[in-house]
Amino acid sequence: MRHLMSPLDFSVEELNELLDLANDIEANPQKYANACTGKKLATLFFEPSTRTRLSHEAAMLNLGGSVLGFSSADSSSASKGETVSDTARMVSCYADIIAMRHPKEGAPMVASRYSSVPIINAGDGGHQHPTQTLTDLLTIRSIGGRLDNLTIGLCGDLKFGRTVHSLIHALVRYNNIKFVLISPEELRLPGYIRKDVLDKGNVPYEEVERLEDAIPKLDVLYMTRVQKERFFNEEDYIRMKDFYILDAKKMELAPENMMVLHPLPRVNEIAVEVDDDPRAAYFKQAQYGVYVRMALILTLLGIQVS
Image 1 (tube, rainbow, N blue to C red):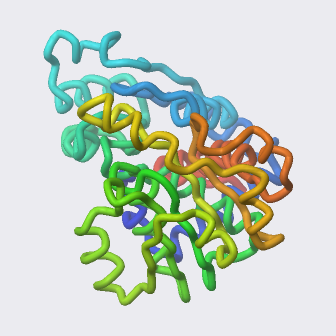
Image 2: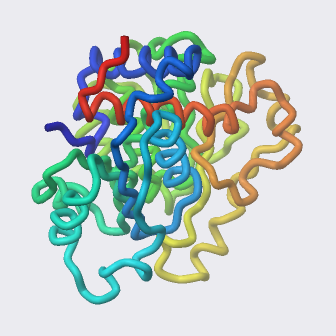
């Protein structure tokens, strides 16, 4: 039995197979329409979510399975003091696979030690968000045609952004990847990721504050929101939240084939006027999230469709 806690749980070869499967699902949805008939996915979301929860549920429904679960800790027995380990043990009696989001780093890992069914980490605090990373990889490869020889700009909240942390871990395994880290001093990438992942792997990167300085050299611009829920006080959040806003004027500086990604939700870091730019790929990215989660469910359940 396998779980997904981190993008590193899959080798590069396994990742490529997963992405190939997702592309086949996109091209031939009817082929997979009954692959999970009789199977149940439990979505245990101790933190608010729209895309991640609904895309997991849509993925299982598209495969012919069914879903159950809760969308906040308040509507679960966690509000009565039930532990993550007990929740995992109990829910694995009811479902064939579990997707869990939790505000505490490592909670899905704890759940995986007690569950009798596969656990998908759907985001744990500011740590990892592996299914978003799979979505990002599928989007970049499907639109750009490759996952190597890329210069990727990561912009916004690089300190608390679990999507950014997961994406860096995944992409450093591909060839000729360079990062441009775009953030204010207060939201810079954590030192342990710079030291243990980028420096250790001799991955080239530069850190800049101005988005305008980075855009002209990028193949991919990955925007993120400043996350209010990660701040300890309102004053710091208000000071940081409008630091970067991508608008049509800044897009004039971008290469004509640069793609703009965003894990969503956005607040105001991407102006609505950018939505009509052909380089804006974040809503396609959300659609790719369903295909890649369908592929992940099939892979973790060991279901093959011929």
